Each structure stands twice: as C-alpha cells, then as structure tokens.
Amino acid sequence: MARNERQMNRRRGARVPVAAGSGNVFADAALPDADELQMKAEFTRQLHNRIKALGLTQVQAGRRLGLKQPDVSRLMRGRFTGFSVDRLIALLNALQIDVEIILRPHEHDRGGRGNVRVVAAFA
Image 1 (cartoon, rainbow, N blue to C red):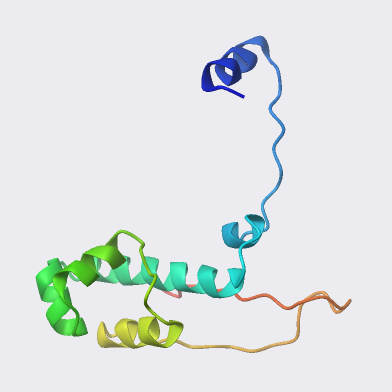
Image 2: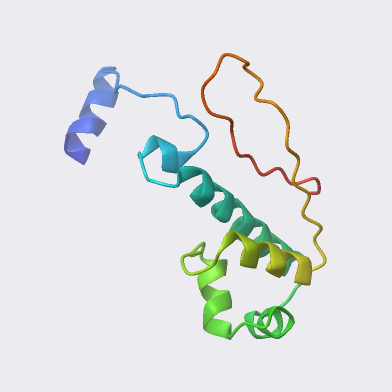
C-alpha cells in the first residue's frame, strides 16, 4: 500500500492491520539467531548511553575501549556486526559497567523456549 493511500485511509477512519510484537524485533522479522541479535542490540545501546553519560568523545571512548574511532562511531550508530557478545560485554566492563547474567526457569512452565532479556539496572 502506498504512503498516500495509507494516509487517505487514516483520514477516512480505515484501520490498518497491526500485529503485536514479541518484544524482539529480530524474532518478529524471523531472523536467525534473533536472541543473540537482540542481546547485542541492547548491549550496544547501553554502550552508547554510557559513552554519552561520561561525556566522552568518540576518540576518548576509543582510547578507553581499545577501539579506533570509526569502530566507536559504528557502535554509536547501533551497528554491532563484527562484535561478539563477549566483546560487547568486555567493552561495557571497560566503561565501568557490571554485567550480571541470571539464569532461571522459564516463566511459563508449559514447554517452549526460554527467553533472553537484557535489563539495565540504572538510569
């Protein structure tokens, strides 16, 4: 549906079908390794937030992280390809962020898969 057609439908009160997301956009897009991609995306977001909170330039952040400025720039723009989960955790640790991993039984004990979730315990 073209953009103008969607806008016209909204004006007429037509409803556009919307599906509820699972909370993991990568799983919703049926991408392989969706849980890992979600975890990397959240770790990257937290790296961005921490660099901003510390008031670091990308060059300064690169020095602290052992990265070149272009790699810091990629991370600041949410581009985490080429970085493993382990490396992203090490980068967070270099910025004085503790990473705690908690394992527990799945909330809905009816079979199926467990979930992977990253929760920040600070503002």
